[in-house]
Image (cartoon, rainbow, N blue to C red; front, side):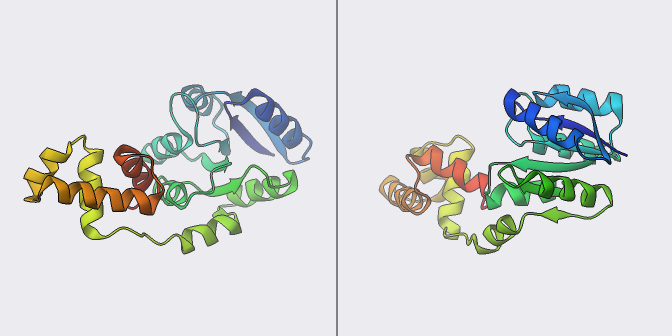
Length: 200
């Protein structure tokens, strides 16, 4: 029997996942949680084989949970089930030691199969996510990345200009180009987007 802790902040989705997984003859849900801190506590208490978790949750994210379990060499394997098909998330998930990454809109049979494979020691990535990660080319130049890193650190345009020996107008031009490439609303949004995609 594969023992599972489920972590999902949307109550209806959590209930549906728990009910559907409990219908599987070889899977039992030993605990559920609606935020990352409760999920970590449930893993510590129940010692499940697999933690099935969303990424975005109150408290710790699913990626935070995976990183913490990886750091403490916890044997519980992590399967991310999310709506986010972003290459940056996938890259961060792999770095955090996640064993599986699948999408919520997959049929329950696929989720159960992925869970069994993760439990068996395999790594599972939804094919559409693998393709997205492969195709997600970084559109930024080295200079644009340098400026966006400074923005992410909280630096203003004048500070960036002084630090990099550029005119403020040049900094604005670089950031405008980066914002256009990323479809960002402003410089902060551009930095956040580049970070989330693993480009900074």
